[in-house]
Length: 402
Image (cartoon, rainbow, N blue to C red; front, side, top):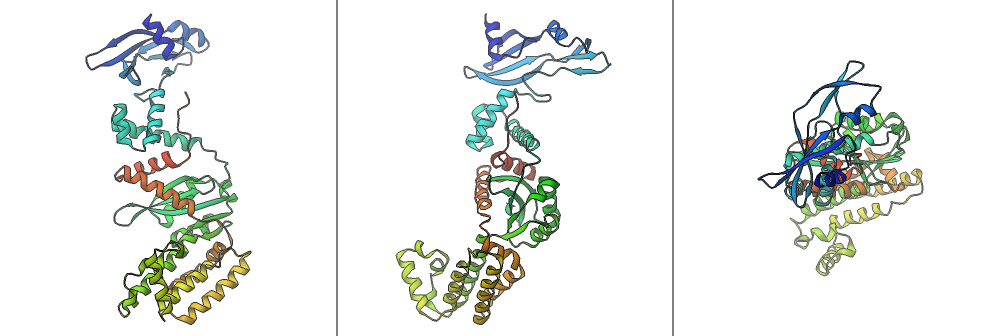
Protein backbone atom coordinates (compact mmCIF):
# COMPACT_ATOMS: atom_id res chain seq x y z
CA UNK A 1 0.00 0.00 0.00
CA UNK A 2 2.79 2.47 0.77
CA UNK A 3 4.18 2.25 -2.78
CA UNK A 4 0.76 2.99 -4.26
CA UNK A 5 0.28 5.82 -1.77
CA UNK A 6 3.57 7.46 -2.73
CA UNK A 7 2.83 7.03 -6.44
CA UNK A 8 -0.32 9.10 -5.96
CA UNK A 9 1.58 11.69 -3.94
CA UNK A 10 4.40 12.04 -6.49
CA UNK A 11 2.12 11.86 -9.55
CA UNK A 12 5.00 11.38 -12.02
CA UNK A 13 2.82 9.63 -14.59
CA UNK A 14 2.21 6.01 -15.58
CA UNK A 15 5.74 5.56 -16.94
CA UNK A 16 7.22 5.63 -13.43
CA UNK A 17 6.29 3.34 -10.57
CA UNK A 18 7.50 3.41 -6.97
CA UNK A 19 9.65 0.31 -6.53
CA UNK A 20 10.62 0.67 -2.86
CA UNK A 21 11.13 3.19 -0.06
CA UNK A 22 14.18 3.17 2.23
CA UNK A 23 14.91 4.99 5.46
CA UNK A 24 18.64 5.30 6.18
CA UNK A 25 20.70 6.03 9.28
CA UNK A 26 20.93 9.74 8.45
CA UNK A 27 17.15 10.10 8.83
CA UNK A 28 16.68 10.44 5.08
CA UNK A 29 13.89 8.95 3.01
CA UNK A 30 14.90 7.50 -0.38
CA UNK A 31 12.14 6.74 -2.87
CA UNK A 32 13.25 4.40 -5.69
CA UNK A 33 11.41 4.62 -9.00
CA UNK A 34 11.22 2.01 -11.76
CA UNK A 35 10.65 2.87 -15.40
CA UNK A 36 7.79 1.13 -17.25
CA UNK A 37 9.03 0.20 -20.72
CA UNK A 38 5.66 -1.00 -22.05
CA UNK A 39 3.95 2.31 -21.30
CA UNK A 40 6.76 4.21 -23.03
CA UNK A 41 6.69 1.94 -26.13
CA UNK A 42 2.95 2.44 -26.49
CA UNK A 43 3.29 6.23 -26.31
CA UNK A 44 6.26 6.34 -28.74
CA UNK A 45 5.49 3.67 -31.32
CA UNK A 46 6.66 5.81 -34.26
CA UNK A 47 10.16 6.58 -32.92
CA UNK A 48 11.11 3.84 -30.43
CA UNK A 49 13.50 1.07 -31.56
CA UNK A 50 15.06 -0.39 -28.39
CA UNK A 51 16.61 0.44 -24.99
CA UNK A 52 20.32 1.11 -25.47
CA UNK A 53 21.26 1.01 -21.77
CA UNK A 54 20.52 2.48 -18.34
CA UNK A 55 22.48 5.20 -16.59
CA UNK A 56 23.69 4.71 -13.05
CA UNK A 57 21.28 5.58 -10.26
CA UNK A 58 20.81 9.32 -9.79
CA UNK A 59 19.52 11.04 -6.68
CA UNK A 60 17.35 14.18 -6.62
CA UNK A 61 16.44 16.24 -3.55
CA UNK A 62 12.66 16.42 -3.15
CA UNK A 63 10.19 18.01 -0.72
CA UNK A 64 10.56 16.80 2.86
CA UNK A 65 8.21 14.10 4.14
CA UNK A 66 7.23 14.55 7.81
CA UNK A 67 10.30 16.80 8.27
CA UNK A 68 12.63 14.08 6.91
CA UNK A 69 14.87 14.92 3.97
CA UNK A 70 13.52 13.08 0.96
CA UNK A 71 15.25 12.01 -2.24
CA UNK A 72 14.08 10.56 -5.54
CA UNK A 73 16.26 7.76 -6.96
CA UNK A 74 16.05 6.33 -10.47
CA UNK A 75 18.02 4.83 -13.33
CA UNK A 76 17.41 6.86 -16.49
CA UNK A 77 17.19 4.72 -19.66
CA UNK A 78 18.84 5.74 -22.90
CA UNK A 79 16.64 5.05 -25.93
CA UNK A 80 17.77 4.38 -29.47
CA UNK A 81 15.32 5.83 -31.95
CA UNK A 82 14.58 4.60 -35.45
CA UNK A 83 16.61 7.48 -36.89
CA UNK A 84 19.73 6.14 -35.12
CA UNK A 85 20.00 8.73 -32.33
CA UNK A 86 20.53 7.70 -28.72
CA UNK A 87 19.14 9.98 -26.01
CA UNK A 88 18.25 9.80 -22.34
CA UNK A 89 14.55 10.20 -21.70
CA UNK A 90 13.40 13.33 -19.90
CA UNK A 91 12.18 12.90 -16.35
CA UNK A 92 8.91 14.58 -15.31
CA UNK A 93 10.26 15.65 -11.93
CA UNK A 94 13.50 17.50 -12.80
CA UNK A 95 15.34 19.16 -15.66
CA UNK A 96 18.46 17.62 -17.13
CA UNK A 97 21.62 18.29 -15.15
CA UNK A 98 19.85 19.23 -11.91
CA UNK A 99 20.02 17.20 -8.72
CA UNK A 100 16.81 18.64 -7.26
CA UNK A 101 13.19 18.32 -8.34
CA UNK A 102 11.00 21.05 -9.76
CA UNK A 103 8.93 21.16 -6.57
CA UNK A 104 12.03 21.59 -4.41
CA UNK A 105 13.18 24.43 -6.69
CA UNK A 106 9.80 26.12 -6.29
CA UNK A 107 10.13 25.84 -2.51
CA UNK A 108 13.62 27.40 -2.60
CA UNK A 109 12.36 30.30 -4.74
CA UNK A 110 9.48 30.92 -2.29
CA UNK A 111 11.87 30.95 0.66
CA UNK A 112 14.27 33.29 -1.11
CA UNK A 113 11.52 35.75 -1.95
CA UNK A 114 10.42 35.70 1.68
CA UNK A 115 13.83 35.97 3.36
CA UNK A 116 15.96 37.64 0.63
CA UNK A 117 18.81 35.72 2.25
CA UNK A 118 20.57 32.81 0.54
CA UNK A 119 22.36 31.56 3.66
CA UNK A 120 19.17 31.60 5.74
CA UNK A 121 17.26 29.79 2.99
CA UNK A 122 19.92 27.09 2.74
CA UNK A 123 19.90 26.69 6.52
CA UNK A 124 16.12 26.40 6.82
CA UNK A 125 15.83 23.91 3.94
CA UNK A 126 18.90 21.95 5.04
CA UNK A 127 20.64 22.15 1.71
CA UNK A 128 23.92 23.60 0.47
CA UNK A 129 24.46 27.30 -0.19
CA UNK A 130 25.74 26.48 -3.69
CA UNK A 131 22.41 24.85 -4.54
CA UNK A 132 20.47 27.95 -3.51
CA UNK A 133 22.89 30.18 -5.39
CA UNK A 134 22.57 28.05 -8.51
CA UNK A 135 18.77 28.28 -8.37
CA UNK A 136 19.03 32.08 -8.23
CA UNK A 137 21.17 32.07 -11.38
CA UNK A 138 19.05 29.59 -13.34
CA UNK A 139 15.67 31.07 -12.37
CA UNK A 140 16.71 34.67 -13.11
CA UNK A 141 18.15 33.61 -16.47
CA UNK A 142 14.97 31.67 -17.18
CA UNK A 143 12.92 34.75 -16.33
CA UNK A 144 14.98 36.92 -18.68
CA UNK A 145 14.45 34.46 -21.53
CA UNK A 146 10.68 34.54 -20.90
CA UNK A 147 10.44 38.32 -21.08
CA UNK A 148 8.34 39.75 -23.87
CA UNK A 149 10.84 41.02 -26.46
CA UNK A 150 8.15 43.30 -27.90
CA UNK A 151 7.17 44.92 -24.60
CA UNK A 152 7.02 48.71 -25.01
CA UNK A 153 8.97 50.90 -22.57
CA UNK A 154 7.88 54.50 -23.11
CA UNK A 155 9.88 55.63 -20.07
CA UNK A 156 13.25 54.40 -18.87
CA UNK A 157 15.58 55.28 -16.01
CA UNK A 158 19.35 54.91 -16.17
CA UNK A 159 21.29 55.16 -12.93
CA UNK A 160 24.44 53.95 -11.22
CA UNK A 161 24.95 51.93 -8.06
CA UNK A 162 28.10 51.33 -6.03
CA UNK A 163 29.17 47.69 -6.30
CA UNK A 164 32.43 47.47 -4.39
CA UNK A 165 34.89 49.79 -2.69
CA UNK A 166 37.29 51.78 -4.82
CA UNK A 167 34.74 53.47 -7.11
CA UNK A 168 33.43 50.20 -8.54
CA UNK A 169 29.98 50.82 -10.02
CA UNK A 170 27.23 49.06 -11.94
CA UNK A 171 24.83 50.71 -14.39
CA UNK A 172 21.16 49.94 -13.77
CA UNK A 173 18.41 50.23 -16.40
CA UNK A 174 14.91 50.41 -14.91
CA UNK A 175 11.29 50.55 -16.02
CA UNK A 176 9.90 53.31 -13.75
CA UNK A 177 6.29 52.54 -14.68
CA UNK A 178 6.41 48.88 -13.60
CA UNK A 179 9.04 49.57 -10.93
CA UNK A 180 11.38 46.78 -12.03
CA UNK A 181 15.03 46.44 -13.03
CA UNK A 182 15.34 45.59 -16.72
CA UNK A 183 19.03 44.70 -16.54
CA UNK A 184 22.36 45.79 -15.09
CA UNK A 185 25.94 45.81 -16.35
CA UNK A 186 29.31 46.23 -14.68
CA UNK A 187 30.96 49.69 -14.81
CA UNK A 188 29.49 52.99 -16.00
CA UNK A 189 31.62 53.59 -19.10
CA UNK A 190 30.35 54.33 -22.60
CA UNK A 191 31.13 50.78 -23.66
CA UNK A 192 29.28 49.18 -20.75
CA UNK A 193 26.31 51.53 -21.08
CA UNK A 194 25.98 50.74 -24.79
CA UNK A 195 26.22 47.03 -24.00
CA UNK A 196 23.43 47.42 -21.43
CA UNK A 197 21.06 49.20 -23.81
CA UNK A 198 21.80 46.87 -26.73
CA UNK A 199 21.36 43.69 -24.70
CA UNK A 200 18.28 44.82 -22.78
CA UNK A 201 16.35 46.41 -25.65
CA UNK A 202 15.55 45.23 -29.15
CA UNK A 203 15.58 47.62 -32.10
CA UNK A 204 11.78 47.78 -31.90
CA UNK A 205 11.85 48.62 -28.19
CA UNK A 206 14.47 51.33 -28.71
CA UNK A 207 12.28 53.03 -31.30
CA UNK A 208 9.39 53.25 -28.80
CA UNK A 209 11.28 54.93 -25.92
CA UNK A 210 9.92 58.46 -25.44
CA UNK A 211 11.79 59.68 -22.34
CA UNK A 212 14.78 58.46 -20.38
CA UNK A 213 15.65 59.85 -16.97
CA UNK A 214 19.34 59.99 -16.07
CA UNK A 215 21.93 62.10 -14.28
CA UNK A 216 24.63 64.20 -15.92
CA UNK A 217 27.29 61.50 -16.09
CA UNK A 218 28.99 62.06 -19.45
CA UNK A 219 29.16 58.39 -20.45
CA UNK A 220 25.40 58.00 -19.92
CA UNK A 221 24.51 61.10 -21.92
CA UNK A 222 26.83 60.33 -24.83
CA UNK A 223 25.61 56.75 -25.10
CA UNK A 224 21.93 57.66 -24.87
CA UNK A 225 22.39 60.24 -27.67
CA UNK A 226 23.92 57.54 -29.88
CA UNK A 227 21.68 54.57 -29.04
CA UNK A 228 18.35 56.34 -28.32
CA UNK A 229 18.50 59.48 -30.50
CA UNK A 230 14.70 59.91 -30.54
CA UNK A 231 14.27 59.64 -26.76
CA UNK A 232 13.89 62.82 -24.73
CA UNK A 233 16.59 63.06 -22.06
CA UNK A 234 15.31 64.22 -18.67
CA UNK A 235 17.87 64.96 -15.99
CA UNK A 236 16.67 63.71 -12.67
CA UNK A 237 15.19 66.35 -10.34
CA UNK A 238 16.74 64.71 -7.31
CA UNK A 239 20.24 65.06 -8.74
CA UNK A 240 19.67 68.67 -9.82
CA UNK A 241 18.67 69.68 -6.31
CA UNK A 242 21.49 67.55 -4.91
CA UNK A 243 24.06 69.60 -6.87
CA UNK A 244 22.55 72.83 -5.51
CA UNK A 245 22.59 71.48 -1.94
CA UNK A 246 26.25 70.57 -2.35
CA UNK A 247 26.96 74.14 -3.47
CA UNK A 248 25.15 75.45 -0.36
CA UNK A 249 27.24 73.27 1.92
CA UNK A 250 30.51 74.28 0.22
CA UNK A 251 29.67 77.97 0.67
CA UNK A 252 28.70 77.39 4.30
CA UNK A 253 31.98 75.60 5.03
CA UNK A 254 33.89 78.48 3.48
CA UNK A 255 32.00 81.16 5.38
CA UNK A 256 31.91 79.39 8.74
CA UNK A 257 35.62 80.18 9.14
CA UNK A 258 34.74 83.88 9.22
CA UNK A 259 31.30 83.81 10.86
CA UNK A 260 30.65 81.86 14.07
CA UNK A 261 26.87 82.07 13.57
CA UNK A 262 27.18 79.44 10.83
CA UNK A 263 28.56 76.84 13.25
CA UNK A 264 26.28 73.76 13.46
CA UNK A 265 24.03 75.13 10.73
CA UNK A 266 24.54 72.47 8.07
CA UNK A 267 21.18 70.73 8.33
CA UNK A 268 19.34 74.00 8.74
CA UNK A 269 19.98 74.58 5.03
CA UNK A 270 19.97 71.03 3.69
CA UNK A 271 16.62 69.96 5.17
CA UNK A 272 13.25 71.18 3.93
CA UNK A 273 12.00 74.06 6.07
CA UNK A 274 8.95 72.12 7.30
CA UNK A 275 11.26 69.35 8.59
CA UNK A 276 13.46 71.62 10.68
CA UNK A 277 13.61 71.18 14.44
CA UNK A 278 12.89 74.18 16.66
CA UNK A 279 16.58 74.97 17.18
CA UNK A 280 17.37 74.49 13.50
CA UNK A 281 14.54 76.84 12.57
CA UNK A 282 15.84 79.59 14.87
CA UNK A 283 19.37 79.12 13.50
CA UNK A 284 18.02 79.25 9.95
CA UNK A 285 16.07 82.48 10.56
CA UNK A 286 19.07 84.09 12.26
CA UNK A 287 21.39 83.35 9.33
CA UNK A 288 18.88 84.59 6.75
CA UNK A 289 18.80 87.97 8.52
CA UNK A 290 22.55 88.29 8.06
CA UNK A 291 24.25 89.29 4.82
CA UNK A 292 25.75 85.85 4.06
CA UNK A 293 26.42 84.20 0.73
CA UNK A 294 25.03 80.89 1.99
CA UNK A 295 21.68 82.63 2.46
CA UNK A 296 21.75 83.93 -1.12
CA UNK A 297 22.62 80.48 -2.49
CA UNK A 298 19.79 78.91 -0.49
CA UNK A 299 17.37 81.49 -1.90
CA UNK A 300 18.49 80.76 -5.47
CA UNK A 301 18.07 77.04 -4.84
CA UNK A 302 14.49 77.63 -3.73
CA UNK A 303 13.95 79.79 -6.81
CA UNK A 304 15.18 76.93 -9.00
CA UNK A 305 12.77 74.52 -7.31
CA UNK A 306 9.90 76.85 -8.25
CA UNK A 307 10.80 76.37 -11.94
CA UNK A 308 9.50 72.79 -11.93
CA UNK A 309 6.13 72.48 -13.63
CA UNK A 310 6.67 74.61 -16.73
CA UNK A 311 4.08 74.01 -19.43
CA UNK A 312 6.55 73.62 -22.33
CA UNK A 313 10.24 73.63 -23.23
CA UNK A 314 10.31 77.31 -24.31
CA UNK A 315 8.89 78.51 -21.01
CA UNK A 316 11.38 76.33 -19.15
CA UNK A 317 14.27 77.70 -21.21
CA UNK A 318 13.21 81.34 -20.62
CA UNK A 319 12.71 80.89 -16.88
CA UNK A 320 16.00 79.01 -16.52
CA UNK A 321 17.79 81.82 -18.39
CA UNK A 322 16.31 84.37 -15.95
CA UNK A 323 17.41 82.25 -13.00
CA UNK A 324 20.90 81.87 -14.48
CA UNK A 325 21.21 85.65 -14.86
CA UNK A 326 20.69 86.07 -11.10
CA UNK A 327 23.39 83.45 -10.48
CA UNK A 328 25.79 85.38 -12.72
CA UNK A 329 24.92 88.60 -10.90
CA UNK A 330 25.66 87.12 -7.45
CA UNK A 331 28.97 85.65 -8.76
CA UNK A 332 29.30 83.05 -6.01
CA UNK A 333 31.90 80.57 -7.36
CA UNK A 334 30.37 77.37 -5.96
CA UNK A 335 26.93 78.19 -7.36
CA UNK A 336 28.29 79.48 -10.67
CA UNK A 337 30.01 76.16 -11.23
CA UNK A 338 26.72 74.29 -10.79
CA UNK A 339 24.84 76.74 -13.03
CA UNK A 340 27.46 76.31 -15.77
CA UNK A 341 27.04 72.54 -15.52
CA UNK A 342 23.27 72.98 -15.90
CA UNK A 343 23.83 75.22 -18.94
CA UNK A 344 26.04 72.56 -20.55
CA UNK A 345 23.13 70.10 -20.22
CA UNK A 346 20.42 72.64 -20.99
CA UNK A 347 18.10 70.28 -22.90
CA UNK A 348 17.97 67.67 -20.17
CA UNK A 349 17.56 70.33 -17.46
CA UNK A 350 14.74 72.13 -19.27
CA UNK A 351 13.02 68.81 -19.97
CA UNK A 352 13.21 68.11 -16.23
CA UNK A 353 11.44 71.43 -15.58
CA UNK A 354 8.57 70.31 -17.85
CA UNK A 355 8.33 66.52 -17.59
CA UNK A 356 7.23 64.64 -14.51
CA UNK A 357 9.60 61.75 -15.30
CA UNK A 358 12.37 61.28 -12.76
CA UNK A 359 14.71 58.72 -11.25
CA UNK A 360 12.57 58.47 -8.12
CA UNK A 361 11.68 54.85 -8.87
CA UNK A 362 15.31 54.12 -9.76
CA UNK A 363 16.39 55.55 -6.39
CA UNK A 364 13.75 53.43 -4.66
CA UNK A 365 15.07 50.36 -6.46
CA UNK A 366 18.59 51.41 -5.47
CA UNK A 367 17.40 51.24 -1.87
CA UNK A 368 16.10 47.71 -2.43
CA UNK A 369 19.38 46.75 -4.08
CA UNK A 370 21.23 48.10 -1.05
CA UNK A 371 19.10 45.89 1.21
CA UNK A 372 20.06 42.84 -0.88
CA UNK A 373 23.70 43.91 -0.71
CA UNK A 374 23.55 44.40 3.07
CA UNK A 375 21.82 41.09 3.77
CA UNK A 376 24.29 39.28 1.52
CA UNK A 377 27.18 41.15 3.24
CA UNK A 378 28.43 42.33 -0.12
CA UNK A 379 29.12 40.49 -3.35
CA UNK A 380 32.58 39.66 -4.64
CA UNK A 381 31.44 38.56 -8.11
CA UNK A 382 29.37 40.75 -10.40
CA UNK A 383 27.51 37.73 -11.83
CA UNK A 384 26.17 36.88 -8.36
CA UNK A 385 25.20 40.51 -7.75
CA UNK A 386 23.40 40.77 -11.11
CA UNK A 387 21.46 37.54 -10.65
CA UNK A 388 20.37 38.54 -7.14
CA UNK A 389 19.15 41.96 -8.31
CA UNK A 390 17.19 40.49 -11.23
CA UNK A 391 15.82 37.68 -9.04
CA UNK A 392 14.40 40.02 -6.40
CA UNK A 393 13.69 43.19 -8.42
CA UNK A 394 13.41 42.14 -12.06
CA UNK A 395 9.70 41.32 -12.03
CA UNK A 396 10.58 38.01 -13.68
CA UNK A 397 8.64 34.78 -14.06
CA UNK A 398 11.04 32.71 -11.98
CA UNK A 399 9.25 29.40 -11.49
CA UNK A 400 9.85 26.27 -13.56
CA UNK A 401 6.88 25.19 -15.67
CA UNK A 402 5.93 21.96 -14.00
